[in-house]
Image (tube, one colour):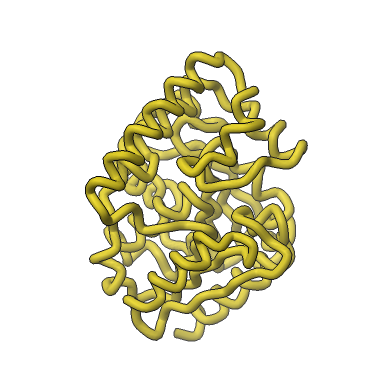
Length: 253
């Protein structure tokens, strides 16, 4: 099935932008505005979010739907969106010409840790449903299961447009605890790939370095100064420049 999406710009180059948990495609406004002059930019709303709020899919099904929606393109994913883009790149490398992962991981390898993460996400999903609104975002987004930091006022307003039942379903189906770990498949990546983390986001700087250590020369890392977990929000211009570099390498490879 196709996910809700918007398409801007024209040209042979296509870039698909995939948001993180509790965000929507509009979260990419600053990035998309700068990229659209160079070609087609597709912004996808994940299940439970934005225009896809009523969609319910598993992690694997969402990755497949992402590919059906975006087609052959350079995929850029943040956090939950990055984990989905990684799964798509491994399952359908014919669709992913290049890959940019912002603050994303291949999942939790240790079964006991993954089970605990799953329990934590279940509790958070219940909290979302119990709250009945988005006020939980003020404090809960800084908790480990969300892998992010407290949102800005503008970011929070975007997140508040998502219905609690959609967010709870998305966390239950696509949280890190529900995701089959992909660490042992990273060596399959053949397309130009960039692993991005904000310099202030020590956890994901470490994850990017660990991923880089088990992949080939087509994979590299970039750590963005003056940025935390959400590089596309903290430093959108720097994020755009990194995406353009990867797009150029995909064209010449």
